[in-house]
Length: 375
Ligand SMILES: [Zn+2]
Image (cartoon, rainbow, N blue to C red; front, top):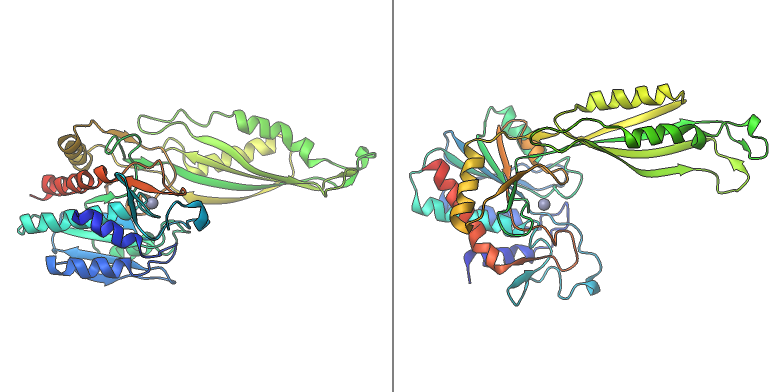
C-alpha cells in the first residue's frame, strides 16, 4: 500500500469532528521527528494546533492544513462507517477523505520523501496544523499566526491543502479568496391593525423598494482576479403570525462576497446610505467574516503550476471562487499563499471520497513543489 494511502486511512479512523483533533496531530508530530521536525503545541480554548518546523533560516515553506472534519450526519445514510476508511473499487471512502485528511497525508509523506532525498535543502520547512477550520476558526490558524508574528518569525511560501480541484486533480488552484461581509438589518415600523393602516407603519412595505434596489445594485466589476461582488438575502422575519396585524419590525439578514475591488467599509457605507435614501428607520449589525486576499502570480504559483504540469500533464487555472478558508489568516503575514488539493465534488457530503489514482500524484506535486523552491 502507498504510504500516502496508509496515512490517509489512519487519519480517517480518528473521529476528529470539529473542533476535535482526536490525536491526528500528535501522530503526525511523532512521525516527523525522525526527519528533523521539532514540534510545538499552540492549542487554544480546546482547539489543537501544532507548528512543526525543520530548519532555522529563510525562505520558510509551510504546508497548512486542518485535521478536523465536519459532522458525518446519520450513519445509516453512509454506505460504510464514515470513520472506518473503506476502499471500494478505485475509491477511498470516509469523512475527511477529500477535506482534507488525504492532503495532510500527502504533504506529510511528500515532506518525508523530500527531506530524505535532499537533506541539505535551502531554507526551512514547516507544517501548520489546526483542528478549528470547519468551526468558527477563532482559535485555530489565526492563533498560530499570532504567535509566530509575536516572536518575529516570517514565512515566505504557504501551500494550503484545501480541495481546490474541480473535474480532475490539478485543474484548479486558488490564489485568493473573496471576503465575506454579513449584515443583520432591523427596519422599525409601527405595529397595528391591518384594517387601520393609517394608525400603523408597515416596515415590510417600507423596506421592499430598498431591498429591490439592493438586489439590483452593481457593487463593482471585479478585477483581473476576482468576480464582481455579490449580495444575497439569507433570511427575512416579520409578523406576529396573525393575519390581521401589521408587524412592528422587519429583520433581514444578508451577506456580501466581496472582491479586492471593494472594501468592507465602503460597502457598509453604500448600503447604509441607500437605506437612508429610502427614508427607513433602521439599525444594522455588521460582521466582517473575512477580508479578501490575493496572491499575485510569483515563484510559488509558478512552481505549483509547473509541478502539476510535470506530474499530471494538466494546465492549471488560478481561481478565487468558493467560500472562505484559513488562507486569509496566513496571507496577513505571508505574501505567497496558494491553496491546492484534490477534487472537491464530495466534500462535506455523505460518502465523502477520493479516487485512489489521485493520492500519489497529489503527494508527487507537493514534493516537486518543494524541490522547485528549496533545492
Ligand atoms: Zn477543508
